[in-house]
Length: 622
Ligand code: F6R
Image (cartoon, rainbow, N blue to C red; front, side, top):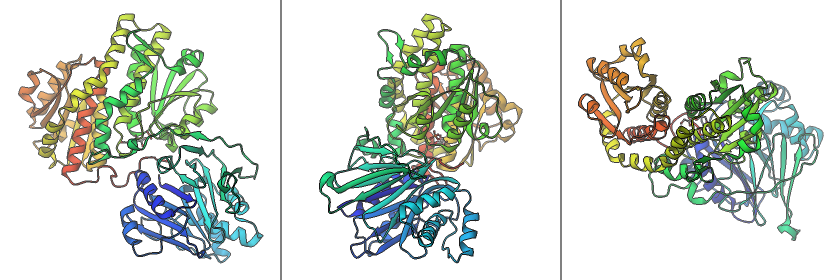
């Protein structure tokens, strides 16, 4: 949540910062701002409500010069979205400016104390308290900026990634992190700063991921020529110097651009065949009928001895977890529980050293999932992560894990990450089942082969794009949708409903089809579209009866059926055909038309598909 960008170097900072904000806009987009120190030593802060475009327009006639600057795109927590509450925030003297991602929990207390000392606040944010506190400490104790930041952060409770500049020292940015990500990019005579690497990769592939509790000093010395006069120092809050590890980022620019698609979401839906191929590369060997996950080789003992698996995740990742439960239970015969990380962390759950906890997260930064990991770790469980964002906090907090390798996901509504997570969960269940000997060999081979064919099947499903777009137009009138599925299709129904509500703002609910008669059936009338996953599997006849029940009440049925099914075609209002696929692999193909359906409904309604209201891609607050 909230995107942070910084630049210190020899070029004009403003264009670099704006480009960076656009790349990070998925993290929040209710207001944006920039702070620049110009040649004359003036610190200019410009900020506006709304998206980065508004900021660009607002600054068109302003002084945007300066080779040092910080910029921010906000997802509001404390204080409504407005220009005043947008970041950067000045300190009282206007010497300092700060940007922040996270939540300062004791801000009210600190603010009260500073007000008593005569400090005047301009905004309702928790962030402003940090810059005012830093300045107060600098003045009162006659400290330099770094030491004042250390002293201030020692008093701060909460989560933060911050960057501060001081107009009296235009060759330095101070940045710090605790529970919110921050990456420093090292160029030739220039530094970059980002909430993730996406605003940096265009300029350099050398990065340092800051660790929790660290403060980075980015400094240029224009009189020094060696290493282009650059100095990067990382210290702890207590001032102890920390070791630096410079890593190489391996993201190519094309992956974070739209590549001709009108929206990132559509691009990411269409990328799925390629993404899943990448996800399985080197892990599935069809000739040898084998799945290899390095985590299962390196940590065989810990994973094989699990008496129970606990899956923790949020949102779409939680839906993937529900599918993982069915896969692991049926292939490996181990009990699996799936928990919302946000509930798990606060309810004193029973976790023991015999448990393996699987944490699933696209961003690798979700605060609730991280906290759930922490709790499970304290109780002795072994933690296995399934993440997408390389080097993010969750993979670093786990004992081992598997990256889904689907490339950066920019659209706020998760699509390719979901199918990537389900693919990894399938491989995990297969590899564990083989190691435990809980799956018949022919069944194992059949699923391995079936999984390797999924990218091709998704390509086939994507051919229904036009049809789904037409169908979406027919249903944009609806205020409610019901999604039904059974077994492996139940989490798909949940995921379809979540996709629709988050980008088109239509109320939608996912239900196990058989539960309909226990309540939701009362909602059905001629205005109610019901999406039913009714493919040819073990539940087929039962789901067919559910469809009859809906039709008897004049509901409008959109059925996902197996190619060639003419029984359901006769009674449903609309059908979308899916290729024939094994039941356990069905979520991977059945989810795709539901992603397209939500996409086209949102487009027809004129909604902002990639950046739906109130949401952010990376939920780093509780
Ligand atoms: C829905 C969506 C969210 C995320 C959830 C967890 O489309 O994207 O529900 O799935 O916020 O995020 P991660 O997977 O990053 O932990």
